[in-house]
Image 1 (cartoon, rainbow, N blue to C red):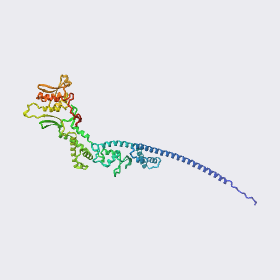
Image 2 (spheres, helix red, strand yellow):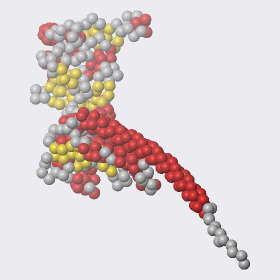
Image 3 (spheres, rainbow, N blue to C red):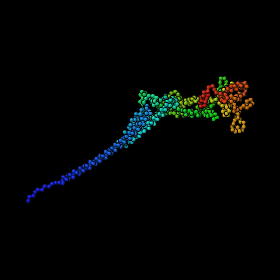
Image 4 (cartoon, one colour):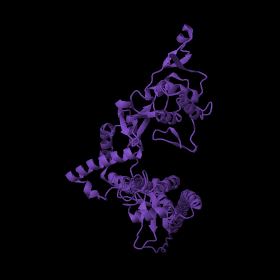
Length: 496
């Protein structure tokens, strides 16, 4: 066995493998780091974009809120006495709610729907507030008129008004010191209401929130706090139209003939006064259904206010109008209402027209007419505006004093065109006596006297002519000494 030197084996590959692995790992880690950096850069970019977008959303929402605040501030500037702090608090919630929705903080559908409803209501505050202010402003004018008519038809019933509500009304109109501020409230259904909170300085007054519609209901008498006195003007006019009308011939408003009766009244001096007067029984029977219907149409509260303030009878309460006894009381009130209508419209002892004559006994029927009778008739005629050449007016006058009038024409052509030449009164001492177009009022009276009292002596006629001639030519009637003008029940002018 020969000797061999031992051989030494050197591993040169393993180190290379390690070097290759290290290089591979370094390359891998570098790739991962680069990928991570790229991802981080992307995330950072997206975050910045998201932040910018969110900031834009928040800024936009804040601008919307600021715009609403500005609108409220402008309205506040025009109404400095009104406290709108509660509305500012409500508007201040707008951006918080809008941001929560826009940024996805809230995801529950029911909650989102509720929040969107709140947003819509908050956005409506400036316009709603402006509308309310305009409405409340107009309402204050109505209330001022309403208060001015207190105790009268169409006005406030002070006898049964709630003192607290009345104090609030005076604060609202800025006539009394107190607190008034606009507020927004949500009802049980989540609906927002804009109104005004009013509190007087009266001890114990806790104040109350009113919407515009609630205040209107008070003024209209729909709410008991401020009852309104019923205005029966239309009912009264309807009742009046039943018994009066226009005279087709004269155009004057007069009592319809159906409701007039002729009465004779004997004076102490023996003269008889004949008057056409209202037939009160007939008038009442005609008007009673309307009067009853008017009273029945009122609610118990309306009737109470009307009765206590207008009819002014023995004081009653709302309980007195209830039940069977209340029904009987309402019937009595209808009669009181009817009586007051008659009195207010001068229908009690109303005289349409009168004339006077001397009652003659059988022993002196053939004696001459008494000059006093003629004088009384002249006194009556002086104030009659029918003393003129007008067939319709003059026939009406003649009928009242027991005469007849006929029209005469010069030619057939005049007759065809109704061109009247003269108005024939009758015969006087064998001659036809007529009214001509150029006759003055006193001349017409003289002719009436001659026809009416044909047995007067010439001396008596001259005395009467002197009295009648006091009429001024062209006036038609003799004006009384006092020339002040008033109107009668029918709206016709009265010289007095």
